[in-house]
Length: 394
Image 1 (cartoon, one colour):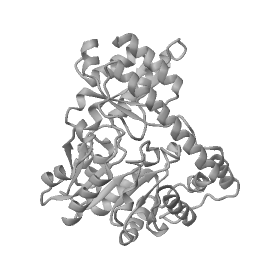
Image 2 (cartoon, rainbow, N blue to C red; image 1 turned 135 degrees about the vertical axis):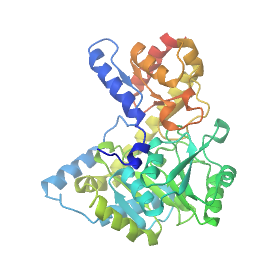
Image 3 (cartoon, rainbow, N blue to C red; image 1 turned 45 degrees about the vertical axis):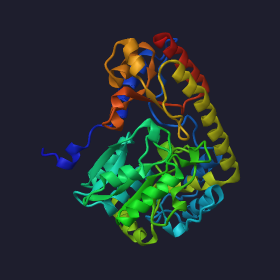
Image 4 (cartoon, rainbow, N blue to C red; image 1 turned 90 degrees about the horizontal axis):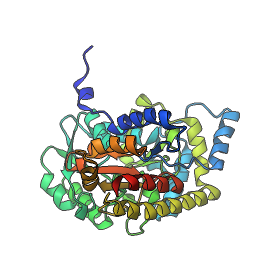
């Protein structure tokens, strides 16, 4: 069977490969005094609040399970619009919001609508691997630009300008970012967008962790800058609906019919039950619970990052959002006599029963010296993980 070149160019999602190995080992140690602690997957340990579950059950009971418009339930688009106004003070018309089958579908739709074969899209290194694979799947070329801790592992206008060439279509940024948990400074984002706009390019911003910002200096949506910016968002992270597979995108008004046409053909519509459930995310009771959980994520960060630093797993930039730690593991590798983050991940998995993600997934520049750890777990699990790592590394 002949496999397409497109498919062959897309690497495995190594996060999942490590996860499979960790799950297999977890089954063997589940009944010991040291069961596996999973710090490798970016999934909140919280599930959707009660009102969301009740709304889903009500939709099923009432037979609200048929197709919706490809752009999503009109009332859900209105609720999202109102959330932008109340949460960020930004006016985003519901007509520019398209509800999608997860943020992944939104990124796929954006790339298929805007990227031609051979187009280059600039991205930071490190960055979330699937984002660059969406570009590749649309026959574009992701161009990874190395970034440093001094730059908060984010793109700068100067680097975008230096990398721009006749094949460049635009930039794809994430703020806050996976794997670093760092955000673009609003002024730098503005400079990047102005530069891209002057060249007729597109500015696409992954904002799926925006609701989990911990610093007012960064927790602002890019949509406040310009209606031409495309924002990708999700119900998975802040709204704790990972397996419901529901997201949305905000696009310029002229792009809505294009996205709708593609969505009709590729997805028909997002999950109807998930959409009716998501309406309850915006009830006052649910929003209060989400804010309580956001404070809990911040408390976990404030404990876990200093604890990692004390073990020599140095986090060079304090995350201002999301629930990740991007840790330099050079000293830990030397301590355990392993060659890099990939081998370290398996050493920690087998010797401490702590699963982490090696940097291999997230770029090509110096990522072999980093591991990503998730603080989406409970505080008790984070304490246990630190205790186990301490035995190995000190």
